Image (cartoon, rainbow, N blue to C red; front, top):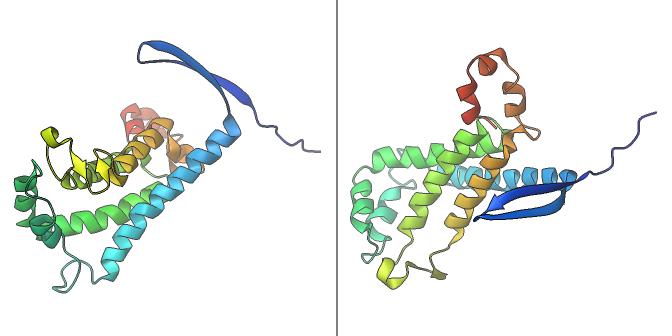
Length: 195
C-alpha cells in the first residue's frame, strides 16, 4: 500500500546584502509555484510569437514588422533612440529574430528544454523591450508609460532570471532527463544551458 507523501517544510539559509537570512518554505508548494511561473512565461512568449505569425508572419509586406515600432514608437528623449532607429534599418533580420525567437523561447520554456539558455535569450529580448520603453533618460528618472523605471518587460526579465536560477526546466521538463545523459555528464559545461 502506497503512502501519500506529505509536504516537507524546509529552511533556506543564505546571505543577502551582507546579512544572514533564513525562512521556512514548503518544497511541494515551491515546486508548484516554479512550474506555474514557467508555464506562464512560456505562454507570454509563445502567444507573442504566434500572434505575429498570425498577422502574416515574416516576409509578407502586410505582416507584422518591427520597423514601425523601431522607427516611430521609441521616444526621441530615450537615450537609446538612435540605436533602435538603426535596428529599424535591418527589419528583415530583426523581424524573424523576434518572431521565431519568441516562438522557440516559448516552446523551450513550456517543455523545459535548454531552459537556462532560453531564459537568457528571453531576458535579453525583455531587456531590449524595456530600454525601448524609456521615455527619457537618467535625469528624468527613466519614465515609462505608467510610472518610472519598472514595466512588465523588467518584471519578465527578473522572473526569467529567477526561473533559470531555480533550474525550472528540471521540474517535469526535458532538462531533467537530458542532464542524466552521458553527453551532459561528459561535458558538464552543458549544464549551464540546461536546468
